[in-house]
Image (cartoon, rainbow, N blue to C red):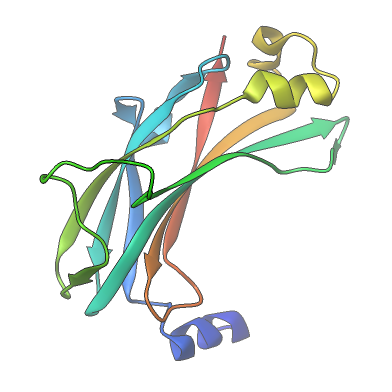
Length: 167
């Protein structure tokens, strides 16, 4: 066990819950694609609770990685970040109410959505004038990260998946 793993375990972040991203745009997360000019990205995350804890929020981040030659360009770029509960959103009674006390063995399935995804804007600022061509460019990579914000944990459980961009 490395130093960072020991610190995570000591501070309560390791082993409280596991996060898995299961669906991106109604596709299995492992093989999901996303149109490069779309502005809304949706998916589902699953939280498997290992120890009793309190879930404060769930967070969703979209990251764009760019390379020029073999070197990354001031990357990664945070494309957009959202979280639930969002104070500007009205939630139905079927939605998970947070903070939420979770018990070991419980599994939470949380659908999510991020808006204002502007991949073409970031590409244009970094020398990629044609977003559709950038979709198949191996120097352009998109990742989605889902985080379970667990009370008292400085190392929140999270999962990251690559998403293939398409024109």
